Length: 392
Image (cartoon, rainbow, N blue to C red; front, side, top):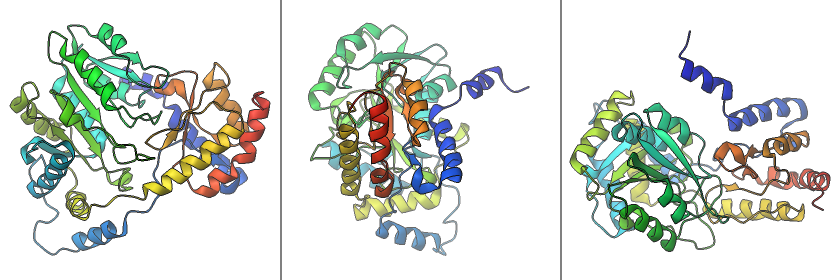
């Protein structure tokens, strides 16, 4: 018999993945053009051409051991490129020794939590949050403490203060946020820093930043490395380079973080013993080239999709704030039971995820990293759904 803890997770499952699978079923029945699948944040933009060229060139490199083992922390040349970019962004020197290349941000988060947590240690999660955070904390014996953000999805300093206990080891922040698209500004982060520094022990800020370069309307994302003392950044190139399937990212630690040297040694060991061993060699070298090229996906394309889907939702009567970043709209559900609403939406072949899956009931998430024909084709379905809900 498999482990009871895992069996319970299988039974609860992931609503996001379930909706994704439902989308595949409906497309077979009704055709792709008649199903409006906004359930999962799977980037569909092409890899930037210069990066694709670099990938082919590196894959063809005849140099011996090009695809062999390297340090568990990754190639020094790749970590140097990452560190230089972070130094530019943060305005402070980041050394290559402060960087560990990882199998995406998910791998990075698990490596960090494995390194930090003793059984029963608490990790504060700000709702709404990426649903897998709960499992990641549980993977390493920790306890998740969920704290709601305010009505604009910004951190509530007093609620965070009240949630801190002697067992609080870390807080995970995610800005730009999945699912809300909120971007924490300097004032919000300064208030958070003040609360954390008033605690009687160091609390690590684990900053999950896969959407850091996916922002709109001239919004800028403050550097967490510049602002916080005990900060650990987890990054993924899944969104900024459309490399989700390649699983590549990094951990970067500020050298002022508590127990810095043991922390870095622990991260390298955790990267190995969790079975990642090292981030994929081919994609590490590709990332190095991408950094030198200053490459990223076409964010303006995503902004056009955000605007188009937001306009459709508003016309259909939904209460839908326009996100400043990331790849999602997070409207308010017309029904208090957001899961029931998602089921009703599916009757119109609109697939989305309930806010309760992200720790924020009363909302639903729409991923707009889909083709513009899907977005435009959904207009009539949303209008009909809005009418059934009494919104128009």
